[in-house]
Image (cartoon, rainbow, N blue to C red; front, side, top):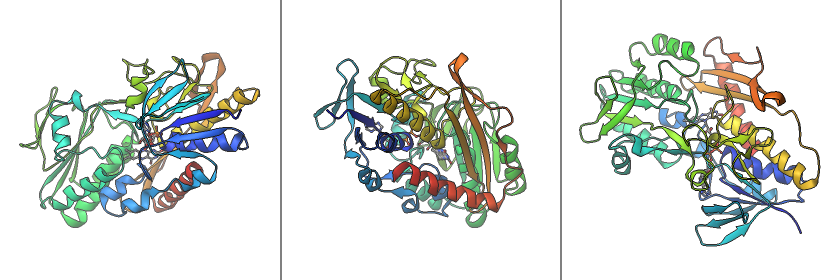
Amino acid sequence: ATPRVIVVGGGYGGATAAKYVRLLSERRISVVLVEPNADFVSCPLSNLVVGGSRQLSDITSGYDGLVRQGVTLMRDTVRSIDPQLRTVTLGSGASLGYEKLVLSPGVDLLFDEIEGLRAAHASGRVLQAWKAGPETVALRKQLEAMPDGGVYAITIPEQPYRCPPGPYERACQVAWYFKAAKPRSKVLVLDANPDVVSKGALFRRVWAEQYGGMVEYRPQHKALAVDERAGVVRFEVQEDVKADVLNVLPPMRAGAIAVQAGLNNMAGKRWCGVDYLGFESSVAKGIHVVGDAIQVAPAMPKSGHMANAHAKVAAAAIVAELSGWPVNPAPMLTNTCYSFVDDQRVIHVASVHEYVAAERTYKAVGASGGVSAGPNELEGRYAMSWARNIWSDTLT
Ligand code: FAD
């Protein structure tokens, strides 16, 4: 019989895994991808929708390319996984068996870790927009409705969280919009971390040189509570902050289905431990976890680029195992994260991650990566090419 691989989640990790199991097995292995959303909406570039230089349609793609690869798409949600029986149960109630499962459910936002946030988010007053889609557009609308002279504040949780440079890029995008449309307004970056987590010197330079006093960065601001009526955030140590548009990012952990399946065995039950050689769960045989949901190796960011790379290694390991081939003993992964500081100019951070067999982990290859000298338009073009390439690689 044809072996079956089930992939849970059609984001950066899952869609890539689905495609590459088909490709590497030369279509001998059947792949079922379960994803509740009709379309793929990219978080990378979604800050440009917040800034107003792009529309949601620019970052949205269909799944028809995967269907052309012979992937069976099920628009549904996986409700539970039985690792012993190797079955999943869908929202529709149907049950499906698998030889191998790939789980790439992304992150869950822990609203309850900040008092009042769940209700404030449910009412639509305090948004996260950290899963691209309708909320990205809703945040844009809040910024458009804000009067000139108003304050936008973003709070950042302690790391690790999805996309280390993402919140700082968003601050730049909001400042870019304010500078043109609402020049008396202010952007407050309220960071639970002691310093800017990624590309710190570059972001600080952009805020100082390009946006003058408009962006204010405050470290050591761990959000504890939100008062949606007053528009106030309270912090563990620092003074309360009032803002017209509050964008509160709570702490994150592996997507709910990974937690439900008991795979979140690392870092205080936040993330899923894996054997990095093939991304198989360290808890359940036959389940490979990729993307943001895993406990990342040192210096590895939670990024779409990394999720795509994890997925290829997992797909290769799965196809090798199901085909009786040897598994690649030395995977090598790359990462680049571009950040738009306005509508054209970009800064990047890049790294190469090598599997070190003796330590069973990935290590950043010395002197392999780096950051931009400064924001520039050429990298803006590279960033758009990066997006088109990774969407094509992931989805077609
Ligand atoms: P996702 O892409 O979120 O996919 C998870 C999928 O699983 C979703 O489609 C979800 O619907 C589905 N799912 C969840 N639970 C279930 C279930 N039970 N059953 C079925 N399906 C389920 N990364 C970069 O590399 N470059 C960037 O420039 C960049 N910019 C970013 C900017 C922002 C503002 C943000 C928020 C993120 C950015 N990232 C960037 C990070 C990137 O988006 C994530 O790292 C990436 O999406 C992780 O892929 P994933 O597959 O783990 O999760």
